[in-house]
Length: 114
Length: 109
Image 1 (cartoon, each protein chain N blue to C red):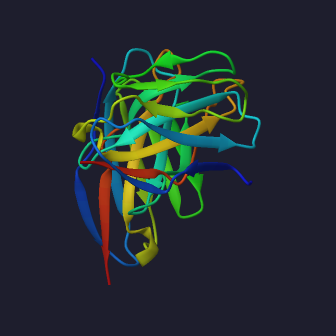
Image 2: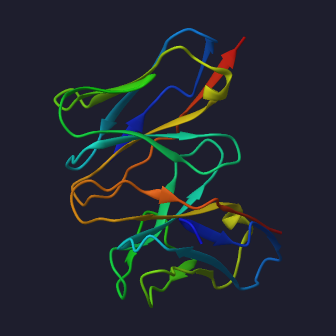
C-alpha cells in the first residue's frame, strides 16, 4: 500500500441496507477524515479522528458512524442507507503534529443509494 | 457562520495567466490551503499560506491577506492539463479545514 486507499471504488446500494466504506493509510498519520462531495457543494466533513481511539462529529454526521481501532484504518458505516446519501465519499489523513495539517486524500468511493 | 466564496467557473486560454479569488469568513484562522481536483479524482495539495504575502511554486503562486479574509491562486503559462477545479480551504480555530465549493477552470486552446 502506498498512501491512502479506499474500497470499494463504487457501489450501488438498496435503501435500508447497511454499508461500510473502508479506508486504510500507511503513512502513520495521526488524523483521519471522512468527507462527502456533492455536485455544486464543497467537501463536507462527516466524521474525523485526531488519533487512534478517538472520533469526532463533523458538519454532516447524521446517518453515519465511524471507528478508529488503530492508526491505519478508519471505516465509515451507513447503518441504513437513504437516497440522500448518494454521493462521492473521500477519506483523508494528515500528520497533525503542528499547525501545518496538509490532508492527503484517497481516490474516493462513488455510492449510489436507490 | 463560516463561509467561503469563490467564483463557480472561469475560462482562460492556454498560455495565459489566470487568478482565482477566494474570500473567507471563519471562526478563527490558522492558515489556508489550495487544492486542485481533476474531474472524477481526489483533491491534491497545491499550496499553503499562513502569513500574509505571496508564496510561489513554479507556475502556481498563492497570496494571502489575513486582515481582508482574502486569498488568490495565480496560475501562469496555462496548460490544458490545468483544467480542473480549484478548492480554497482555510483552517478554522479548531484546525479543521473549511472547504469552498471550488472554482471550475476551463482552459481553451
